[in-house]
Amino acid sequence: MPTIGSVTNSPIRPGDSLELNTRNWLTRGDKGGQVSVLQQMLAKAGFDPGGVDGDFGPKTQSAVRRFQAARGLQVDGVVGPQTMAALNGSHFTPAPRPGPTTITPPSVTPPANNAELRQRMLQIAQGEIGTTERTNSNDGAVLKYPNYFGRHSEAYCSDFVSWVSTQAGQPMNQAYVPTVKHDLIASGRWKGKQNPQPGDLVLFDWNHDGQPDHIGLVKSVNANGTITTIEGNTGGPNGREGVWEKTRTYDTILGFGNPS
Image (cartoon, rainbow, N blue to C red; front, side, top):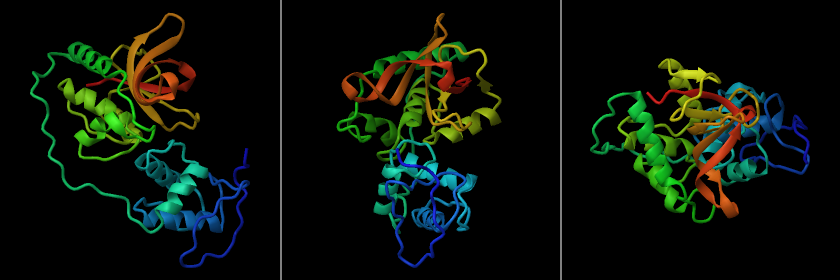
């Protein structure tokens, strides 16, 4: 595997592109000319890294994560081969910004209480299992989730949860998982890893860096210490990406949130 952090402090010239070789990835803590070029490219693509200073700090990492989410890449904050290729392809091209979208909530009676909302959300999510991508590129039938909110092809795990919640009578419109966590904390609905219940939102941290990378819904809390979930933008049988039921262990979970 390539090493991470081998960065040289080379001069930057107008029009420089970010080059990746088999030894150089870019990640938080790196410094140098290549980080400066990365920051320039992120800014030109519409993802503010907090300035161009050659220091891969938390603001640059956040910009990388936002770029990865918008391009349907694994959201890990690390600039590896796929992210590098996407950045080079989008050099000096602003990220698409959809115009104002009027979302008409479905005509459903609002849930009487939190328990009814949870039941509705799980019933709706269960009915979506098996909705798959066409070419494992955030395309095909799964586009119904971001398209509902006026967005296009993207990493859609949060779009899926937002769509389910909205269909159940609890409007939600979030495409970026860290924003979901922020909203859960701000509204007093963030539970951490305590007391998971069916119908909870469940946020995952694949890299154990304290940042949410993925989201789904809790279907059941199991006696063997695992959680059964329903998730969008996840791998299923025969390698098909889409909406699937999964069994997860607590070591991958960042925390849970009440749906309302």
